[in-house]
Image 1 (tube, rainbow, N blue to C red):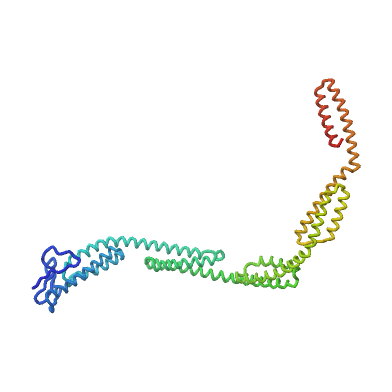
Image 2: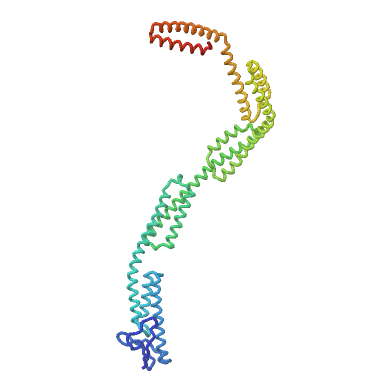
Amino acid sequence: MHSVTAAADSTPEPTTSEPWGRVDDDGTVSVREADGWRVVGQYPDGSPEEALGYFERKYADLASEVGLLEVRHRRAGASAADLRGAARTVSGKLKNAAAVGDLAALEARVAALNVQLAAESETEAVAAREAVDEAIAVRTTLVEKAEALAARDPKTVQWKQASAELAEMFDQWQAQQQSGPRLPKSTAQQLWKRFRDARATVDKHRREFYAELDSAHKVVRDQKTRLVEKAEALAPKGEDGIASYRELLDQWKSAGRAGKKVDDALWARFKAAGDALYGARIEREAAENEASVEKIAAKRELLEEAKAVADERVIAKARTLLTSIQRRWDEIGRIFPRDTERGLDDSLRKIETALRTREDADWKSNNPETKARANDMTRQLTDAIEKLEEELEAAKKSGDKRAITAATDALEARRTWLKALGG
């Protein structure tokens, strides 16, 4: 019988000098354990060293598996539940393993790892329950949003935005299913049924809304098509058709919408019909403006000539000059554009107003009746002043201060009136 000390790889060296394995003369190999020697197999066709080396390699493989399990635990790359499953597999291999080495040390390491994994599994279970609760809350929120959208009046919904929102909710739901925690089957089915029903209701409302909208659009499209045809029929009238076109435009504005593409196409035709009418007006106005260039220049020359009206001191001559200018002004006729005409007329009107003001003032000052009234008032004031002067002299002689004051004030007032009348 041969005994050989077995290499233990990453396990500690035994505390005794006794070897871990032995080989009998018939090639039977045994491993030393706490309660004695246990046969692990036979290797009859080789030397004792070869036989023992074979079973030592078996031990090294087991030690590698234990080490790899510990490394995976340290790196935290796998869940405690997965590692516990791997540890059970390794423990099964270690039990009565056909290997030579310190199997008890490997079992102790696995047992110590299992203690840590048990505690971590409980923490993971709590986290898993919390993750499930959170996932249920997220999906419930998605369900409630979808149900709220389904409960809205279809006529108040902005369907383009609502469709995008519902599509985003569905994407979030799928992301939850793919990457989120697995929910209890009954809860998952109940939430999905609510979400699916809400989506179906929203889809039904959307189809009904657009079907009704299409019907309304058809009515508006037909109405606007008739308006376009009427507008295009005005083309032979030219500028004279603008009034009728404006009435059609009012009807267009109150007709409603026929869908963007249809509306844009019909509006392009309707506007082109109007542009043709207004184009005729523009051409006419352009011709009138061109014909008015010389007239404008002529009226500006008359305005320069009219400046002499204000400088003429003799009002009768000023009136004669202005009358001559007005006659020639009227002979020139209307000019375009109208804004230019109004500006020129306003300038001439200011000269007319200034002369009329002078004439009014002159008439008032030379009116016989006015003069007679002024002369009569002058005489009355003169008599009153003479009388007040006598009263003032008498008051001064008598020393009556109140009479002096009253006579002085009255005399001053009448002298002021007389002065105003030119006396």
